Length: 130
Image: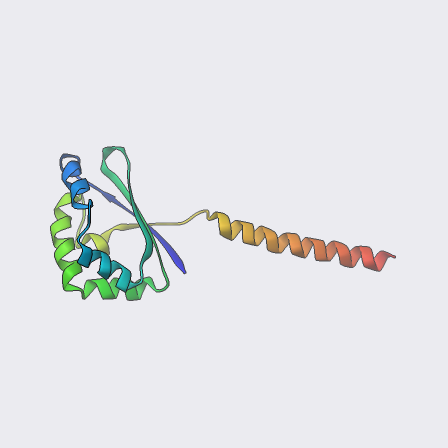
């Protein structure tokens, strides 16, 4: 599974309309997002119109291709593109992807692995000393 985060900048003068367009999103667009394989999809809005999106997917290239070929997604993205500053292309294809620098579960799993390895090493050392 891949975690994807992205950033867009909503035009401040269109913030209210942008929010209204997402309450609710078209049912057919929701179905296309799910059919593309994206899940746990969220959008977060910060002051000044900075928008951060997040979703999880097994194959993001396949999800991108699915949505790029979807007439519903094309119509949605065409209508949504006017809301963003500095965007060249469809919002779902041209958003700036963010680099993940920390994920709690990954680090806990890694720490658990090294704790188990450290315990095994100590047990081996202690066992050979007797």
